[in-house]
Structure formats: structure tokens, C-alpha cells
Amino acid sequence: MKRLIWVFAALLMAAPLFAQDEAPSSPFAGGDGQQVFTRVDEVNPMDSVKTFLAKAKITLSGDQEKALKPAVDASLQQMRDGVAEVLDAVKVAGGAAAGRVVIRTAQ
Image (cartoon, rainbow, N blue to C red; front, side, top):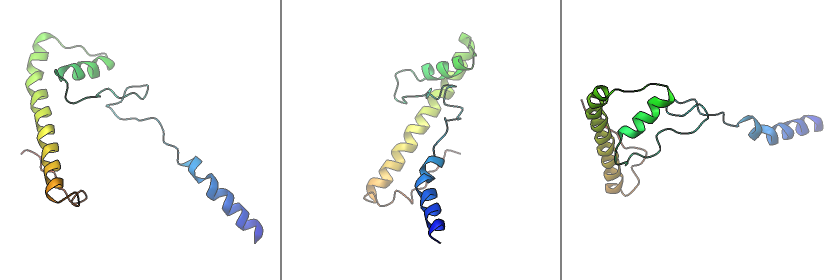
């Protein structure tokens, strides 16, 4: 019985070693685990898109960039509006609604 308790105690102490996280495998993380998109409030959001595509060895022509820019700007504005909506909902509820906030997306 004592031996079983010691084995259980040893496994319990070693449990954090088994829970170590691996490197991120997100498509928004670089191959070396560094995050590509670091700031959302940049002056030119296309710079982040170009950096992301450059890591995938994709280059954009001027026409492609002009066609993509309105979609990137609209997505950035949608993210800002969504974050503002969530923050307003949390402020109204006094911070207690953090677990109950519903984020609506544009349709």
C-alpha cells in the first residue's frame, strides 16, 4: 500500500512535465513559432498581409494588391467594430458578462 502511494505521489509530481505545450501550428504563426500578425492598428494593414504571403513565398502584383486592399480594410474594420461591441457589452454589465457576451457577425 505504501508503495502504491509513493508511485501515485511521484506521478502526481511529474504530471506538469507531461502537460508542456508544443510549438504553435497555426497558419498565422511562422515556421519558427513566431507570430506573423503582431499589430492590428498598423497604419497600413496590407503590410501584415504582404509579410504573411512572403513567408509562404507568394508575391502580389500591383493589380492584385489593389483588388485585395478593400477586402483587407473591410475585414479590419469589421474586427474593430466587433471588439468595440464586445467591450461595450462588458462595460454595460460591469464586467460580469464576460462569459455571456455573444458576438454577432455581419451577414
